[in-house]
Length: 73
Figure 1 (cartoon, rainbow, N blue to C red):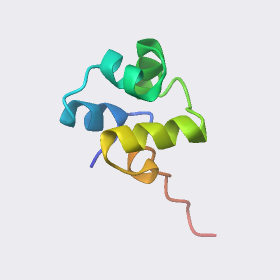
Figure 2 (cartoon, helix red, strand yellow):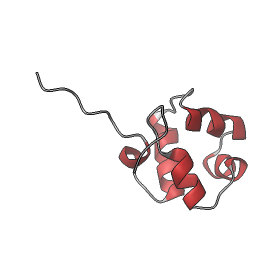
Figure 3 (cartoon, one colour):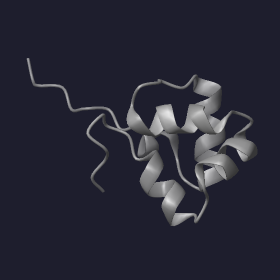
Figure 4 (cartoon, rainbow, N blue to C red):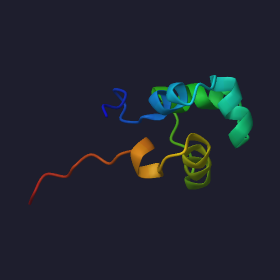
């Protein structure tokens, strides 16, 4: 799965779950604007919010926020 330009897959998983940004925010206990900022990559959620997002979207934190592969040394 290809993530957003800022490297997360929250929007794709939210849409697949058929949730609005406000609905997802309500489920995980944050504002709609926090979800907007997270999807855009302007806000890096805490570990706890990342876990709540993953649980609400039926996936893993690693799937929502994949790490870029490091170049071999």
